Length: 440
Image 1 (cartoon, rainbow, N blue to C red):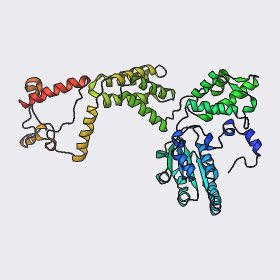
Image 2 (tube, rainbow, N blue to C red; image 1 turned 180 degrees about the vertical axis):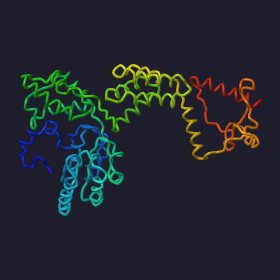
Image 3 (cartoon, one colour; image 1 turned 180 degrees about the horizontal axis):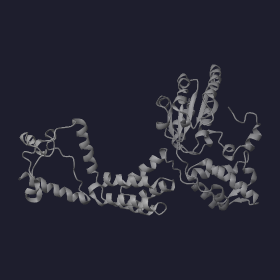
């Protein structure tokens, strides 16, 4: 399954991209993911113990999933087969399994590395199950998507899920500088250096993605050599990198992560963080009306009557962004975000709604009390429809003691106003009404 089987090693090293040429060959040279490879951590212990189990490596691009799979297989002295979910299918898998069975009889394990495993549908993923259960193969799957959504539960339960994080700027700096010094696998043979400002631009601009950093470095090196420059400068790297938009997949897990951070920043009364996540969504191509809808929901769910103006402003922002479009539509959205983030908070209305819905669901359609029913016909009057109803406007303060819930829920309280914002006024008013009702 090696695409370069017929090509001599020396030619392969020259033809391969820089990111492939400088890929670490020892676990000690792997940079990043210290939460998995540090002393006493899971993978470090697994390697030292000489055991390997089926794994799912979940993380953004360029964080070391493929490299880690190869190093784990090498440390286990296993035969490693790279299997792409994009270009391979069940037919290729059967060939791999037959070879794995042959090697298993000879005492050698086979690690099947499945790149982009989330591209397999459920039926295709099911084909792995018997071979993983029998120990014919050790499966290491890599995915940029949340395995909870993209991998079938039976396969998920048979694999240890490991989360990989974007690399830090320090880790990226170490990878880039090491690539420049690597005389054995190039480009160290060129004697090229990178300017400090260029290096800083590169490690900041790739958002934790080592592969993107190395690809940009390779392109910048080529441009600098063509110009006869001994140093890769900022200009070359800016041209090579072509600053990409922040990672934000509108249909993937990152979409939900950013939206969650946005709403929680609003709820936490943090306008600065809320604005940051707003711009992350907009720069990533999110529909501004989706954001406006979330603001309207938030205004009722998390602010409610603590500031009745919040819902009006959120609805106005929706109308404004719909009317003017982007980029100017960012302005009313930003105004709404800062207003909602700094408004007094209360979820009392939302909680009251859930509690009332719970009783409706649990108790069904309870009968309406007779005194609350209308009596438009003589028969209904004879059946006591409306009998005993007390008209509030006939009483001082327009308040009267009277039950409005079904008999089974008599005295039940759902709405408990918060002691903040305008709801404090509502709470005080309701307390006065309670006292007045007791006297009537």
